[in-house]
Image (tube, rainbow, N blue to C red):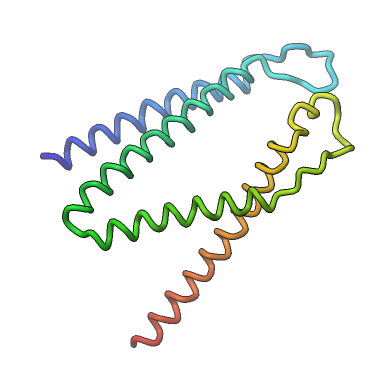
Length: 157
């Protein structure tokens, strides 16, 4: 019974988000241009597309956090060690983000146009470096986990 309900909710959520996303993308691509004579063409519905992206991102973050807390509280009752390992993984990711933010360079860029100067601040420069460095670290950890898992599987045969 519960699995059927979860599937229905998941299916409807995916369907609704997909339909809204497709309509938003069609409006963005085929909705016209603000000033056709401008050097850089700007679609009319750029703001709509960005706002929909923000809504999806915020929804994903909120649902992920709530489900993580719910799963942690349920797992803590049944499997304390497993729950703490999950919490350790989240703490490890937070540590990676903090360390890579501190590693980031806040030197202002000089070759940007006037529109880009808004984001040429130490906070945004360090945040950009944080995401880049964190991506590198996570990719390396993924490759290491795949290699380690393969070697472990080969050794156990």
